[in-house]
Length: 242
Image (cartoon, rainbow, N blue to C red):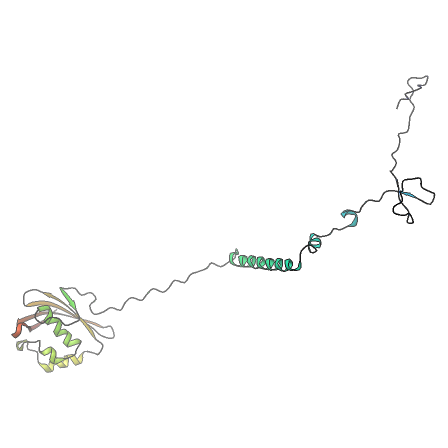
């Protein structure tokens, strides 16, 4: 620094001045026996000492901090803590269920396919076709009706006398032979007949005999009829086909 006031004879000479050094600011601090209401700023006697003003310790000085829950617990009533604990328990349960049900390693859920209904058992009329397809008796005044009534007496009623009343004497069928034929049919056997008239007195007939063990027997016939007393028809001839 160049000397400002009285420069020496040599203008180029310099005088080095020491820069002022900062000093710490000190305040009077009352001693242990100083009353708290006494002003510490007046002139201090010799038994007082000077010291740097202490600063309030922060988190770095104390080496720790008070956790947030340490202050919250003094602000919430006991009932609020119980409600909070219940809410936390519910949330934990929801998270656990979500993890168990949606995990990456979860096995795929498979839905059992209900078993399909078993196909209905085949009955005797399955596959038959004709103008009349039936397993019941009919009107004996018609060609299909008298033929259906004879087959119903043979298979359903198993009644040889009822069947004989539908036969003309010229048919050549005797009672004993007809009764023996009925007895030979196993119990539980069902039947069906398809009738297709080919004239006013004649029809093609397809008979199915279905036994209890599901054995099926087919008969093809040509049946002739003739009028009888009272307007009814009688079977005059049964001719097997095939």
